[in-house]
Length: 298
Length: 233
Image (cartoon, rainbow over all chains, first blue to last red; front, top):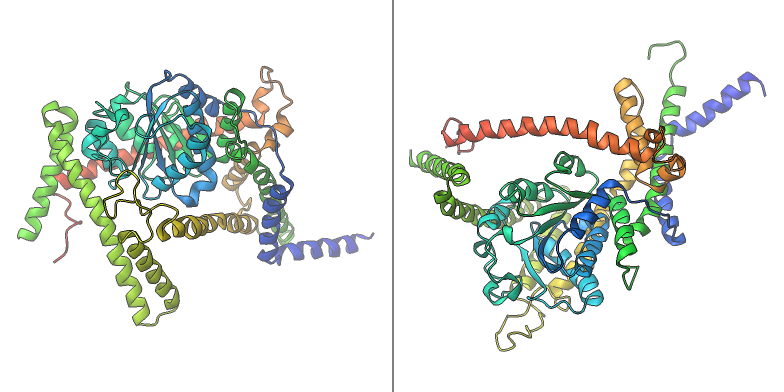
């Protein structure tokens, strides 16, 4: 092939790239997610230091202690956060920890309800509402809710989500503030969330309890400055959920891996989608470099 | 006069109490009261938000502006959820209080409110979020270009994090022993280094700057120097 022919062919390929309709990119992204889901692609997960730190923080809580889990996200982020929330509740219940559920997001309460229905009730039927777990639900006020919980829990939550007065709930008998909990876990998609639990919860009582967080990928940058002192562990996005699920499954196998295992299921599409993104970035740059005028200004 | 003096006095008092409550134990209960006011105001803000949603969309419909049909759907959905939620339409009676009318949860899946949440709102919001993947892919192809040193650094970091956040990171560099002298070349180690050192250092600088700004701004508000939050009238 002559140099001229090669140049013409390259121009043709570059031309296709520069004029590429974005609908082809949408199609490629759709396939890169759909095909691994349909083929049920699964890959081994190797837990990283943050997932191990989260797992160990929960393992360090004495059996029978009371902990607080805050559902600070809504259905928009559930694809990323629900797998880690499910694994977290299963892990805590397997360790016989008593759980108090709250929500700083209006729809966080529904996410907590869903976790209770799909994880707590079927896998741990011995857990009784009011005795082993309490659903306090959502309260408006963002960080104001945490500030009041830190000094006066009954004032912030006089009733649980079903309207039952908390003095009638054995689990919350004598609980005055956040100091009653051994660990606080926030599964968080943004403001208000894990950062506020560190600032206003841990900040008010630095030695009373540990704090761990499950976070979306975009938000984790705001949480990293607090790790590992104020935040003992962070689960970062679906990858963090998959690593944590691996640790939990090793020690506390769940009866149904389709519930505690969604993080690992989602790592297949994530791998192919990430590789597609890298390929698209490389192709975009190839098109830019090849399209530059030769010898001209850059 | 009163329109400006009273809000400034409330702000000054509330701010001072909140600062005092942090340092003085006897002021803690005052702080709790102020925080309760704050939480009540935050709940009222939700009502204000709903009122604003109605006003903006009604205006759009009445002036027949572009996309007024969507405004009508928004208002109809809002009204439907409000009515079935407030009136607890279809809610199953609460087994704990079977004799008390309206004691059942409006959120149960058996009620229209719960059904709409479970089968309409959840999938719709998840769909909106999922669509980001398509637009990010398109933007990465068109805009993520290595035009200078800064963008090359950004690209390199993106490649490392993208690979290390999947099993590809382990396939490519997982064979390097954890305890060898070359372990720093493992993608998971490089990613951890980027996140724990480079990103954290930058984020700490930003957060300290923001915190100092908040302290300065709070002082200006408490002392009544900054009054930009008040109405010009």
